Image (cartoon, rainbow, N blue to C red):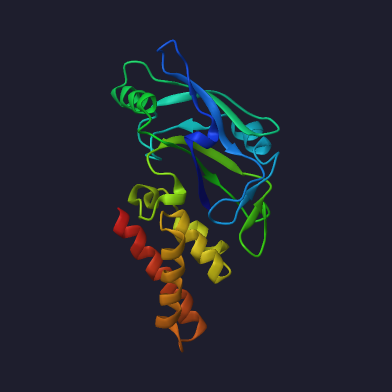
Length: 223
């Protein structure tokens, strides 16, 4: 499933280089905390993806069109995932991102990638994430996830419901899939609750088909 985790820049200790070349460094993820979804990322979680997939891409606001720069360093230490990057010279988007970072109006960093069954352990309140199968990108973002309550249609487009749906074996899995698509925590829970009410009394095959039809409608809505 596609997962995104966002921290405020004050939490990730982002620092801009004084040279004016658009270089910056900081923590994209911090180990041992509990986020708004009840998830905790453990030390060592990024070792697999960094070894097998290399450094993640850099985008602005998770818009997977034109990279606004590149990460030159991505490594774990005792505190979290440390990254060093540079914005692309003469790229208009990169110039806008640099100006916003300097002014403090761009106030979040977010990691985006894929988790598979076996990468995490379920808890009563969320997950303990032991491994990221693929850390695809790290983005400077406008809204930290804790305060965002909206559907980001560009993120919905990047999710392959057809392949991810078979991994959903419970209401909780469906909620997470919807949240990963950009729906807020409470909106995802309310959607699943409404789906249960609509599907009450139907046969199991009809229920599964109806859930898939609803997810397909979400995908078409975003295209």
